[in-house]
Every structure is written in C-alpha cells, then in structure tokens.
Amino acid sequence: MVRPDSRSTCKYIFVTGGVVSSLGKGIASATIGCLLESHGLKVANQKFDPYLNVDPGTMSPFQHGEVFVTDDGAETDLDLGHYERFTGATLSRLNNVTTGQIYSTVIEKERRGEYLGKTVQVVPHVTDEIKSRVYKLASLGYDVVITEIGGTVGDIESLPFLEAIRQVPYDVGRANVLYVHLTLVPYIRAAGELKTKPTQHSVKEMREIGIQPDVLLCRTEHHFGDDVRDKIALFCNVATDSVFQGEDVDDVYKIPLSYHAQGLDTLLMRKLNYEVTGEPDLEGWHKLAERMKAMNGGTVRIGFVGKYINLQDAYKSVYEALRHAGYTLGVNVEIVKIEAEELPPDELRELLREMDGILIPGGFGTRGIEGKITAAGMAREAGIPYFGICLGMQVAVVEFARNVCALAGAQSTEIDSDSPHPVIDIMAEQKSIDTMGGTMRLGAYECQLKPGTEAHKAYGRDLISERHRHRYEVNNKYLPQMNEAGLVVSGVNERTGLVEMIELPDHPWFVGCQFHPEFKSKPLAPHPLFLGFVNAAKERMKAKQG
Image (cartoon, rainbow, N blue to C red):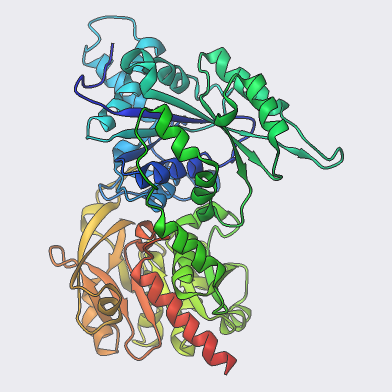
C-alpha cells in the first residue's frame, strides 16, 4: 500500500469532467489554483493524461495541440500552460503524468523483481503508482495539490486514474480530499430550455465508480436560476451552494473573478478546513479586467505564418502571449492566420504588406518552409515588425543568407541535407540520435544579451533564461559573413557558443530567438519580447493611420 509522507498536511482536489470533452477542465483547474493562491495557499496543479504515449512530444499537433515545455525539459500537455498562466507556479515533469509513464514504471519494477513474484495487476500496482505521483508532488511542501484527470468520465482509458483517486481518502482521510466535477448543462434552442439530465447521468457515472462529487461546475451558454441549481443539487446529491455556473465568457481570464463572485473560493476553503481571513488578493485580476474594458488603442493585425493554423491549440501559448501584450498596451491583437504553403509568393507578399507585424512560430519539417522564408524576406525589405520564434528565427537567417549575403542555395539541413550553404545545421550532440521522444535540446538554458540591442532593451538585463525545444541551430561557421552584412547576434549561450537571438539594427523591430518565450508569458506579466513586438506593430498601425 502506497501512502503519503505521514508528516504531510497537504490537501487534495481532483478535477474530473463529464458529458463531452473540451469543456475546459484545464481552465477550471487553473482557476481553482488561482483562487486558492489568492488566499495565500501554496498550490500545485497536476495533469493526468490517459493516453499510452509517454509524453506528447512525438504526437502531431493535429492530434494533441501544443506541446508545453517546462524548465526541467519535460514535454507536457498544453494544460500546464494554463496552470502557469493562471498561477505563480513554475511547473516540472512531476506535474504531468501519462498512462505510458505509469505502465513503463510498473513494467520496469516487475522486471527488476520489486513486486517479489506477485501477480502484477491494475489494482493495486497500477493504482498505487498513480497515487505515488500525487503524493510525490505533495511532499514538496504544498498546501493543496490540484490534479486534473484527462478525458471524460465513462472512457475506458481513464478508469485506472479514477480508481486511484477514489482510494486517496482511505490514505489521507476524506476531510482532506475534494472531488470537483465539470459538466455540461446544454440549452436546447428549439425547446427554449436548459437540460440537466446530461449532468445527472455524468454524476451517476462517477458514483458508480465510487466517487461522489463534492462540487459541480456546470458549463452553460445561458445563465440559469435557482430552480435549475436546486434540481441539479437534488438529483446529483450535492449541496445547493456547491453547484456553480461556468457561464460562457468572451475571455478566459475573466473566469477567476466570475467564480470568485459566486463564492467558489470561499466554499473550497471551508470544505478543506482552511480559515478565510479577509479578502483574497485578486488585485492583479481586477486591474486586468479594467484594462480589457479600456482597450481603445485600436487593433493591430499580426500576420501569423504557420503550418498548423487550422488547429487553434497548435500555437496556444503564442496566441495567448500576443493577447497578454495587447492587454498591457491597450490594443486588440487580431491574428491573421496564414497557411505558409497555400499562397503563391506574390499573393503572400501582397497580403503581408497590409499587416502591422509578422510572426513565424516554431515548427518542424519541410512543408511550407519556402512560404515562411518569403514572409521573413517581406518583413525585412518592407520594414514590417518581425518576430521569429525557433524555426521562425532560422528561416530569417536562411533568407538573410540567400538574399543579403548572396549565398545561393542556403538552407537548413533539416530541409536540405545537401545544401551548399547549411547556415542552419543539426547540433553536434544530436547527430548520433535516431529516436524521437525527449531527445531534443529541451528546457531552460541561459542566454547572454548584447547591450544596446532590442533584446537587451526588452529584458532590461544582461542574462536571461528561456525554454527550448529544437534540434537545429545557427551554423557559427557563417556568422562572420552574416555579421559583416549587418545581422546582429544579440544573444548567445556562452557555455556552448550557440546563437540564441538575432536581430537587424536598421529596422523598426526585427528579432528572432531560438527559444520559446511564449511559455513564460502570463496575463499579469506579459513576456518582454512580445511586448516589444506588439508595441512595434502598434507604432506601424498608428503610422499607417497618419
């Protein structure tokens, strides 16, 4: 039997979802973390993903969406991005657990004989391993661990996780555990009615598993009254004051204040036996709400040249980081999504000419690469603010090498291994690796900034640390030639000599970075590079308006 550290005083909240997927369990979990943190508690959010992949690192963005990278180099679920954006936490590989990780560990233990010849079973061996991941996080000194269970109640895949969290009260005491269930109250337009039956059946599924939800968060398009709340409470066996409305909002960052207004944080504190003294510290969120109302600085249009633009979640953190900058600068950021391979070069240039800024995000593979190179060239030639992230920096270097340094055929070896001028090349330590998962340059690395550059102005300091996810780098062999032609290396990793940032000095704002700054941007603390980029786009917008 796995038990937590007997000295631990941690409380546990488990967030599950029912009826349909994509209800927003990640946002709900992040909101709970935000609200409890505002009362002075130290919280940690955790995500359990029921898929058999060890992590999402090898999964297509069309399947999974964005891969969020932590400081310690874990490739994780995009919900960890929500957790970091809504709270003050910096997460790690302990905060995301998959079925693949659990079964890999159990099988390794069996091979080593750690089960002493016993028959290895889902209960207790798999469920014990799942619980151990919760208790290991709790042992780091948190007041509350909030664990989100991926998938929808009723799915076969999530059953071991639900059984594991059902057992937790037997280890720590029922008074130290809360089950929060996110469900759907649909509006049937033809009948003009809200329907509670899907919520009733979802809770019934939970109770058949052995879990009685303590709190219900009901997603709904329409506000419902006390009659609907009372009906849900009666048929789902919860107190009326434990039924909350997750009414649709036009911005997810309004959700913490919405739930606070309904008293969710006070109820959670009371149910966890924490004393509520005074008002929670939500000043930053109130100020953000005021800024949202007062955004009267116009609309900047950002040409977003990507590969997976038809999937909203593929570039989730980049989109959010742009919005964060817009809130601070008082402008709406309109993201004009441009599929890199769809438009002929002339049409692409004509479209980009109308933009206030051009951003090329990270990515892998050959598809659409020439369109991205064309976009970088358009930004350079027309003086349009440009921000290149990871691959976006690399295509800017390729374009500069071809059209300024006259290096015909310059390319990344990821795209053309026989390029006569491999200005972007695979890192030396990557050349002998033939597997995919978790083998890139991952996690936080330091970068020394060059004084006087846009990068240095944006950060306001000499040394920074940012998160990476890549295999290819600028080929230092070509740096003297490109430097002489005007390309400035504004950031390097001094230990490895790898180029981290480039920019063009005689340009309104042309910056590329090898890392992913979007992962560290928050609505209450926008990333400085996104602030710099959106501000430059704002200045172009104002100049065009005369």
